[in-house]
Length: 360
Image (cartoon, rainbow, N blue to C red):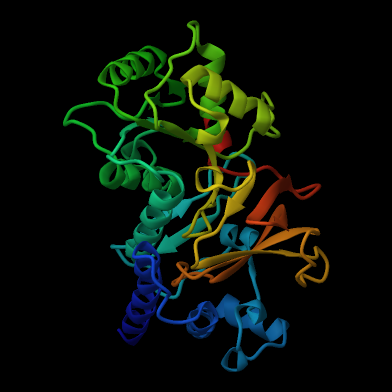
């Protein structure tokens, strides 16, 4: 129970940072202070993380900044349980799509309270920005009941419940099994256009590709203020579509500006998400971080941070990952630019990943 109490205290500190962000005030304590305390807690409770500290010749008690924390590779989530707590009936488990390898990455959560708070706060800021009333929701992904171990499905469901307004009985999800419910989706879009209320359309890139490829009608211009969130790539699957082409096609089909088609970047191994900041005034393709997470490009061999403007592998420090790994090492290539970072794709030789390609 001591570990549970320590976990609860760390979660409360992270949620205090989230609350400060929502209220537009300075956080109650520095990022690094929270990061190193979480890292020490994880090194004490997770044998694999303790071994990682020893291999890096780092003493958790001597940590002073987040960049000193050894990062856990995302592939480790495929082979070992990375959790500060023992398996228990109340835990939530998210799994990677499993479309590229037989072994699926697994991320266990003792509680999703901090995940939910962080997702809602930053989603409201970066995706729902500027809306004077809750929009209607349209989701091109399976409902939560059909994909209970999908972190993306969980996040989208929270958005539908907390950030949108949907009448009882109205349909929100339009993927049935592995197929798009084309007729039902088009009928719902027509009804929302008639209502004149802004719409937020949430979906994976490949779901959008399949929907657009299957359309037999012209554009359905959504009401002013509508926007689209698309996540994941299409590289390596049956049909590859460039981000620019997909953005243009979505904007044309739904009658929104290309700046209202917002890319989300996240992964099962994280508890935080990143968004293109186009609705916040950044350049197209530039993703922004919440104050409780950092994306640091590092050299692929030394894992040392590279200078501003140089490409590197994304090391992500996510304070909301209280009960797993506060620092993870990905195979995604990124570069820091003014206002945030650009996602350049997977490192050469790395397998494609993500929930977008599961629908293919």
